[in-house]
Amino acid sequence: MLRFSSLVAAVSLIATPLVAPAAHAQAPAPAPLAVGSVAPDFTLTTVTQAGPTAAPFKLSDHRGETVVLAFFPKARTSGCTAQMHTYRDKYESMFLNGKKVTLIGISTDNGADLTAWAKDDGFQFALGADSDKKVGALYNAATETGYHRRYLYVIGPDGKITYTTSFRAMAQEAYDELDAAIKKVAR
Image 1: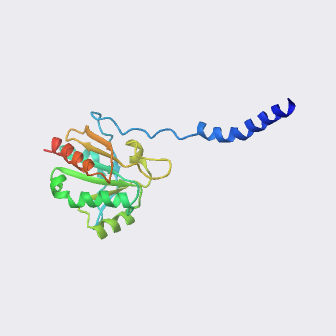
Image 2: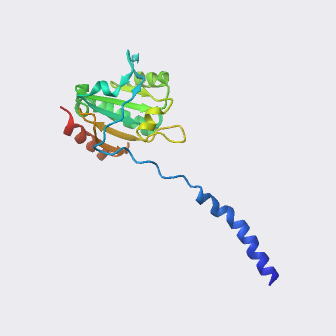
Image 3: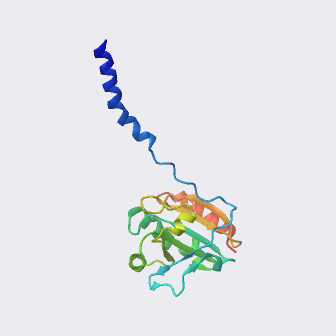
């Protein structure tokens, strides 16, 4: 009997570490902000293929326009490249060639890296350098790993969020849904 109880005690000591990590599992990612809510205002350094923009991007300065915020994890990675290339290739039709629709791709990359990528890949839209992750935090896109979640927001001319999603960069229907969401509110 003593041996059996010793065996049970040994097994429970061995099993404890196997169970313990589950108690420390990461909490699920916060959901994107709700449709219908006012988009939090922010100011962000932006770049284009020509370099840093003359003035930082301030969301409230773009009232009356449709603004698309495309948070992405890291420049030049496969999913992010596919996403930004699709935006580039469909810029005229999906983003109305920038007329009353402003697209900002936002990552934690620095401005120099984003400028080089925009130049190398011919992006006609601005990229935002959120190195301190403050904008990502406002929009529930920031992660503990230092990258952004691939969240996407369409903000209507009234400053309210009209569409949001955890964007699927490799799914054509994600681009179709985004196109329809932009067309619904762009004036």
